[in-house]
Amino acid sequence: MNSIELNQTAQIQNIIGENVLVQGFESLQLGSKQDYCSQGSYVNSEGKQVYWSAAFDGHGSSDAISIIRRANLFEIMAKDNPEIELQRQIDEFMNSKHISRESYRSGATMVLAKVTFYETYTEIKFTNIGDSSGILYVNGEPIFVTKEHNFENGEEMVRLMSEGRVNTKMPIVKTSRAIEVYSRNKLLSKKGSYINFVLPDGNFMELSPSQSLGHLGVCGLNPTVTVFRILPTDNFKIVLCSDGITDMMPVNGVGSAIWLKFIQKSTAKEIVDIAYNQWKREWSVSQELVDKDRSEYIDLLKMPKVKFPTRGGYDDCCCAVMEFRKAVLTEWRLVDVSEFMPRLSNDIPIRLSAQIVEEAATSSNKEGYDDDDDDDDDLYN
Image 1: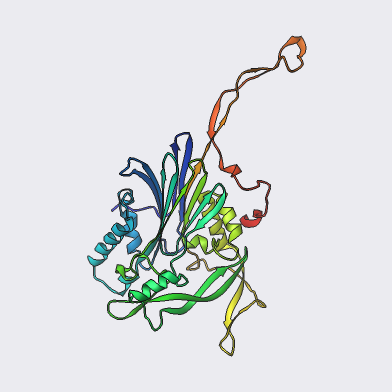
Image 2: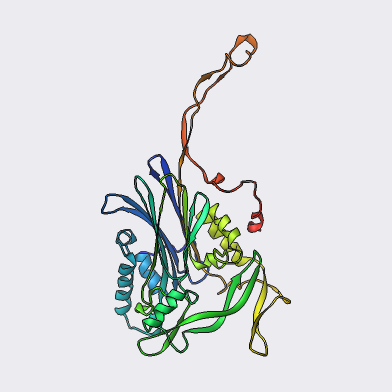
């Protein structure tokens, strides 16, 4: 098999009538080298062009993400439920080799967006599996962020319990350490919460996402599908990213507003670059501790400054973006203004001339934000 380039970068422009749909993605393998992005388009049964973007975040052994990287995603994404075909291909590969405990640990999240342009509306469809994130902006405003599939997702925990997929006596366990960014340079170190899945042999396996591709079907698949219909004249931007980005740039909860604003104004490469700088920067760290009476508290009295270790401390980062821009028509034509303005020396009339230019609106002046706003200038520091 041909080797696959792990770090990725790409950008293409699709002309939609007089408008432009820009697709671009970027990935940077900082940890286990298991993040992956892909984009493309196909013609559906109605004869409409469908544009799609997908981001995957592999975990455990690299088997699952390797199958996804080598799969014909351009064919698979044309299916109504592409996750079923991806799961089938992963299972087929895993069952072809000796199944061990590690086989159950191999999986990958998926967040997928499809865009279809109709005469009277634009349809945007999100399909989410796991704890990667999808964000939708319409006319510069963030209107939707996918809900992560993890232990905090009540619907997911009910599903797992009712399907008998978790240890009913101890469905959630706290082990190792996790981080939570709550400002630009401060984070909380706390115990990580994991879901305690039951394996076919009766043993248990701890996973962070409540569902995922792979894992030999132990998690089950129940993707969250969300569909939006917006006006054909609306500008929109879709951002899909792995948790290597959202761990450093939260898009939910405390501190998310500034990052949602930054992401709206940024390309896929800029988003990945900032996430990378966040992983490398120095942090003030508070600790989640347990008191003598077993009550938990957060110690803000001691906040040492630390950096993540170069080896094993960083997470992979990937981001895929689709941005629709209305065309802006600027017309410059030959104009004789001699009747309205004074003449120059030698009685030469002033004339203004240029050519007609039609161009797509650039991202340097996104609708909905003030270009003079410098609140996020130090994000690059």
